Length: 364
Ligand code: PMV
Image 1 (tube, rainbow, N blue to C red):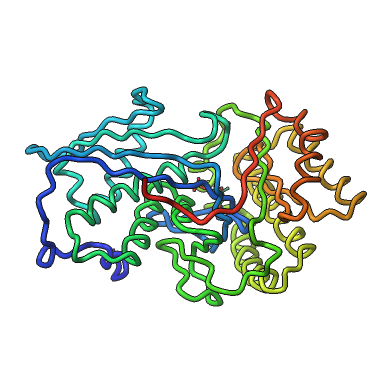
Image 2 (cartoon, rainbow, N blue to C red):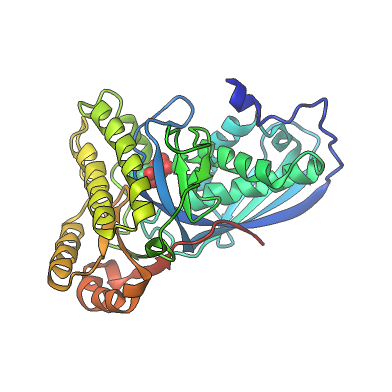
């Protein structure tokens, strides 16, 4: 453990542990969509390159953490999704608890009931791990604050919530605050860190305010290759080093774009990032493809529409077949009409979600 990790452990000599017997805390936490992608990790959930994402507004998870003090040691919890016990989620929570126990040792002293629900359809292919892990981390931080009210200020609270979220699911550390979050150390971005997400600290042109993201649900099935396996395949990948330094340079370029508001440069960079992410998958050993034929149909339609109309609409992808359609707020009406008329037919059951950039998690 290095010095910075250590910073997140409240020292027992100064911990005042007020008694906290039972109760509950609730948080709502958003999903996020990366513009410069994280793909490849090392150590304990540390990114191979810096990434940046828009925090979303409408796609979120609400989590209530019920806690009750117990005598015995060890983890004790149950998870409920939409009111129904979800034992399938529990192994992921156990590994999360194992990773965070040294930072929040009080988790051994309580039995928990974790009640969670998503604003987006279950198994929509939208990763609920970012919003889910960040909501749970915020609830745990709320408990830590109740236990140590004098030691925890807002700055430490959100920083440690992001740090814990990262240990749950890497990109979840970008789901605490908004509107633009950097994760991964980058020399040109002050305070950026591999350990937690930080708010992008420089000027953002008005073109990017309230940027829109419509998520087209192309394939709601289980992914053939999980993110965890995909990240792992970047070890020894023939193009890994080139990819990590490209992402680093792209983030430098993004800084210029955010300042100037140059939407053509934004489109070129964001679409290249999305296709490069999938190119890494297709050139892994073993290779795999997460896009579906309809993903490509949608991309071609977006390119044709842009060509015909001069629109600034573009796409990005996460680790799946769904397409995130990104566009500035002043094109909202036309693009949403275009999506309904031309793109919804490629979505499973015609389903898509209109979202936009948001400001981060909320305490409920
Ligand atoms: O946080 P993970 O392990 O689910 O990985 C997310 C990876 C991408 O969504 C593909 C890219 C990113 O930066 O969010």
